[in-house]
Image (cartoon, rainbow, N blue to C red; front, side, top):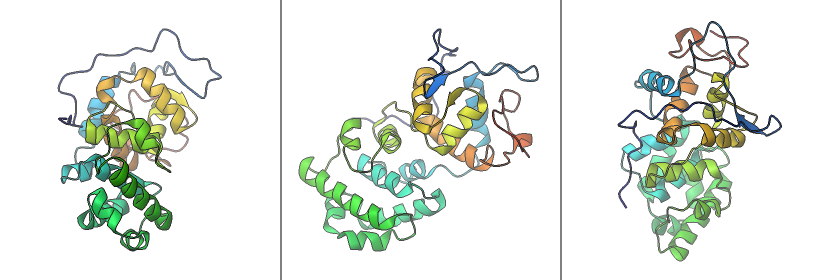
Length: 258
């Protein structure tokens, strides 16, 4: 199967307005019309993401996209890298992923290593002992049940212990070209701060984005908002004075900006 590139869409995605029927306010996450502010422009997701794309051009890519650019673009490799990245900064998980995949980049090779040997290779990441056991179990099952090749199937990936929608969707998006939204803390924070969605959790943000975000951006939004959230729209004291979309962002919840 030919893989779709996770790069920016080649044609402008159609502008999506808020759906005619929003979810009830009691829902854990729902699409909302960004709150009106006289000092802000109407929120246009195509324009906003275009500006964000330009602003993050010189920042390092998110770890899994960086791995794919270096040739580690199989579904198995991407899933391994995503597990390593959980609760771990990209600056740590990327070199650890590269080191592990240089040693064992296939299910067969990783299954031959003991959990203890895997653990020795991934010591810098958080929860390394549990992740070593998890990666070994995934490698063994992939080798034995799927003849060494993971199918591009969300349900299969999430059937592995510890693999949730975030890792399943991002791995499938990069490796298989699946249109699937992966919401980490950066995507959750930024899209809610913009006022584009209103949700209390990353899971609820994913549901709201699926109802609102043009499908052409479903994979790319993670690639864009991870570096944007790390360097510009930070968790505390966001750099609003340097933000390329300040004139459209509703700055929901921002109390202390730079």
